[in-house]
Length: 510
Ligand code: ZN
Image (cartoon, rainbow, N blue to C red; front, top):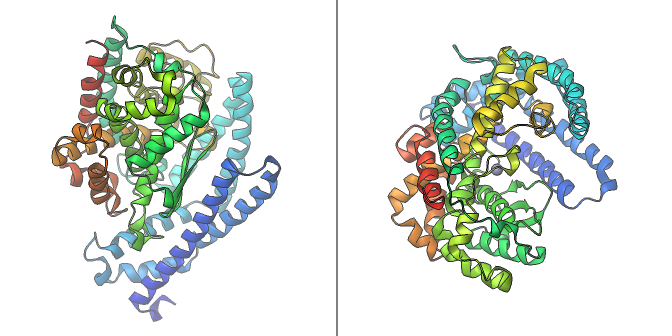
């Protein structure tokens, strides 16, 4: 069939095929949003059937053998591939990548993985509830075994390791050696920084984080802040769910969720700004390329860089609170009257080494991620067995965070990721933090006095910069290339360390 096709026709076929698949994926994503936000509990069985049918259709499309013919025809056509950054070349590169990954696993392994992880997830939930690691250990053992087989099917670069093959699914080209090269100096310096902060005799007051504030008022407050930084509510919504997320079904229909607790407005604001950052990225993707890689986000870590940038670089800055403090007072009145802008700013930046990743502060969060990265790498290399995981976990928490882990439920059973077979995922969180700091430094160097702008509520110059440099290119560059192109340097830990030290040491009177 391919021999009779002219190349532009093959490219048009690929375009149509993937745009149709993207419509199906965005429909599944909307049903997923509805399940978390709106669906009545009894709707679950029917929803599972709907989602399973869509997943089946999407899988059939993404492994359609005609793709191989179309791709070969296009890849041989220099008019499409001569410039590797052209729209067509970018699309072909990513379609090839996706097709190869989707077709490299034998069907029986796909089935075994899906059956094992779906049971392992349930066993993990029970084991965590009962604080019974022994119940989960054999399942983790099986998942490690299947993950190794999966990695062998995908393959990894020379001098690489199995972890690389799995991580590549979340972040193209991410390898353990690359991650370790960036993480190790960060870890060494973070441990020292956290130690210094904890030795301070003048830590900031926690009063702001303990205020009891009505949820309806919190909702109005976070909505106003997210709109002020640039989220377009004509092309998006904000709702609540137990785990905040951003579901990008289409650039003109972005669904954000956040969560509220009466005594934690700081968490509601942080979660909202975080998801707003994801949403701003999705709203900023080039509309004319939607449904193709050229119009898609780069990968998990660049997505996370956008959420962390608005949550931390902006939302935890002194200048942000200069602008936001009067708005806080306007929304909550007497309840916050006793707190100065300085007090709120300091409380929003409190550091406290703890057991649970999802509750960690900006400084210690990355240490939680490094522990998981080092352990999953060892599990996949065969240097660590599932049975020995709890003791290795607890030892690292003592070493890096100085905390004793009282139970596996609060230790190695706290995250769902490994039970789902998601090995190689965790580092994207910290890479996102690192990219956010490096991008922010580059933006500040180009735009001038960002704090003066934030203090006036002017966030548009920063958003425009992100639109132009990060959002508009879609998936033209991989993360490492995008970082070099935008900041002039490869990714390093220095900008994040500078950001944390320059902000936190004064807050702690150091
Ligand atoms: Zn995120």
